[in-house]
Image 1 (tube, rainbow, N blue to C red):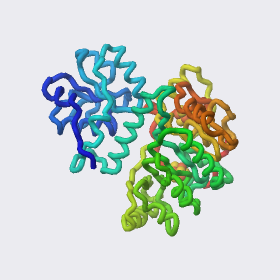
Image 2: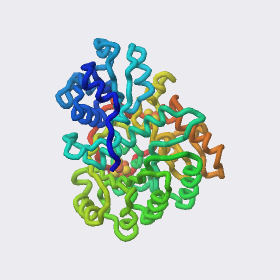
Image 3: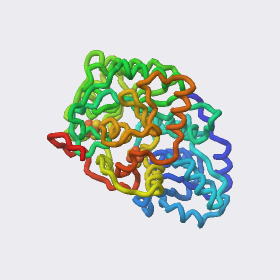
Image 4: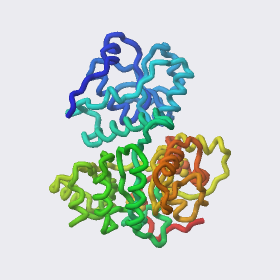
Length: 401
Ligand code: SF4
Ligand code: SF4
């Protein structure tokens, strides 16, 4: 582990007694609070744009609505702890604040062992790395490196569960297929060659272990030097064996289990197998929003742009059947034929596009700030989208209307 050196700013804040705000009452906010408190800095409050958080408390501090920050002096220090760095910075500058910081220098390398953040160390490491890559993305311009936070690699359209409200739209597939692995290999090779780095590949379906050859994809992805992590998302209904287990014993691999309770019928067996085999893993109980329906709703461009900007998966590039999309809903909705193709919303890797042309295409798609065609068919996926019960099972695929 590298030696952690607290940024100079911390000593200044510990001495000065200025107001310190953590903007974003999520996991990065919790980690920033833990680090600052242990470094002797008193945090004034959290702030968060989500109404569901405002008026609550977190770690003994109030969560303010952003407008309320106007009560604080302009020399207050504000740490950005969320994903909407550009939008938040603009908003805070408009309110007269200039001491605005991200949390990279504060959190990178901080020793969280023994902390009471409610997150295990594997998750903490990923959260901090993703924040760091989010900051790099926000700071880059056309001449600068093209780095991606993460890229979803879909290995199958099939799932061992049939969730009525799956936000990846598995409930609509009537004849799900496994991905063509030659096409997938070729597409990933060209993407990696066209960019400067990527923090995380995420291998998913459906259920990735439904595909008996998922090991081939995992081995390929872990082999790229520029890639730091390969995360496999599973619903814990299948315990991988043979090659599909062997490929997980790799320092870059993290198996992220979504624990759906009784539906995740092999959960304990899977955890035991991963533990016995030294595979890094974590298990999470999901919280779902009502984001798994395909239904066109007439909305204005301004409404759609607002949906897109606030969406929590608007930067989850998704590779599906040789095409790169901006989000999983756009990928699966288009793949299902339920959302009209829009060349502006996709980078087509079924052709031989590569090199500079591909780089420009990925930069255009990843840097885009206006809505996708798919947003018109989506119920949104942000703090305003209603919460629903996860993983209600259905017997048959839902019809596409
Ligand atoms: S949400 Fe349900 S249907 Fe969708 S991928 Fe996960 S387990 Fe499968
Ligand atoms: S279609 Fe738009 S609103 Fe829906 S998940 Fe994708 S980016 Fe978000």
